[in-house]
Image (cartoon, rainbow, N blue to C red; front, side):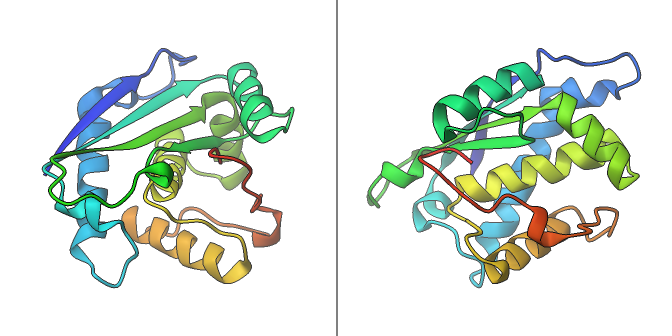
Length: 185
């Protein structure tokens, strides 16, 4: 399987941010490995269409709070900043045999919110962005968290994808926004 990644890393980056975070290879390798890991484990829900595809495609955009607020308002009717939005393309795609390329959708992350959350969680921006990108990817692959059990399963898989380092602490899992409206989350 190959991964076609459209990366929009326009910013807003600060001089203190690791330069590797704006490199397409960083995210290409990470996302490819995560998709392969999920497809290789039959116990993990993942559309068969994705695992059988010769190529998967997705977009990843790093932006600011103002832009993600506008997107959140338009797609989720929530006029506030959020950390990550996922726009899944597979929700409307039927399972088709022998599809060579599958479009997963787009992940949009607010760097402003990610920086605040990294500070609150006492870890670095790299860890926070990997956490948010993994969350967005799981939504593109059909994962959701409408209840506490599904949220716990999703968070556990995110930790596994991030090598189980335990650096991300959810102090109150009930504070995580579990409502999904439309195609965005």
